[in-house]
Image (tube, each protein chain N blue to C red):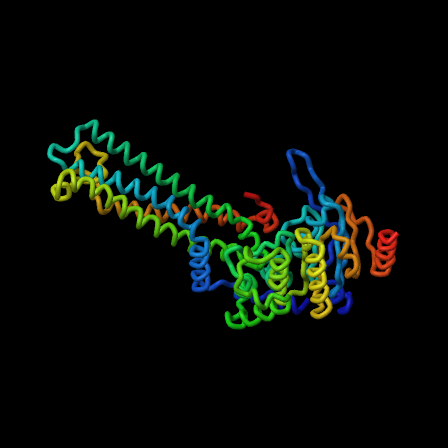
Length: 250
Length: 217
């Protein structure tokens, strides 16, 4: 494999399988997923609820262990990493965004954002400075000392995006980032994600069933029953979006 | 790949949470959810106060002229054992609940790159603060309240003639002196709080983050 090939793919999965045991029966949430994601891509993983997209999100993010198969992040097999290396990966390489925001409720917006920098050993002053910058970037410069309970859903998700970017990761993983938000706020969140993708070249992998994501995605991976149904490229998508809009207009 | 490899070599030093910073975070966590902290500390407080009052009462009664009848002495031992059990269950329950309702927070911290040991460290500090506070105040007030009652009833002789607190032998004066029994009460409250918090914290930290995030209370 040449050096450029190594650089090209930031995430690769090989025959990825995950089974859950529920009341004596085996549920196969993922069934042989093969997916290569290029550096700097904006990927949406689409599918109905229960299709396995959140499970795939957890596997790629190293939040759960697969039953079979492999996930490579930067060509490193995640199953080979020890606890320290896995923590390092979650801290520096991947930023997570969740449907339920998952901010620490007792911390202010700024403290939530500086926490991953504390774990990464960034000096306190530098962390605060960067935290304020990130909050300004997501449009919350005047809310830095507010607690999550004092912020709206959209504002909390912006804090979560800023937190995900804290250690300048190569990948942002988002699990239904617009799932708990209204249409307008959801659009704003998608715009911010796309902006980060374009400005910083961060790879965005988003599990979603929000069709608004289609507009900004480079590729869309359609998942059904734990298998990849098809992968649409940007060109296919533009056609589809056109069709959908045409239907709505008619 | 070489870049990733080079970065991996220094990982043990790279992911860190200095004690000073952990202490700061734990203190904030206790103070900010003050209402919840007070309830948890009250569980520890009540357990310690109950045990301390029973021990004090036992010691004072033992010192009275004539001491305790054999059946009274047996009842005192029974009371001490019972209060020990009540205190233990109360403290363990209070801490277990306080940590279990924060599984999601633990899962989130792990997503942000916290090592298991860092999560456990935060909960160690928090529970030690709450446990020590609850146990010290509880023991002091438990002792104080009962001491006041007997001071009114028997006068100052209640304390000059005080017997020993815990006697398992036939002789009413064998066993530990009250101050030692109270010291053990404080230590017990503190240690139980920390152990009862560390167990669920450790379990949550060991879970895959996805599982900890899924836990609904």
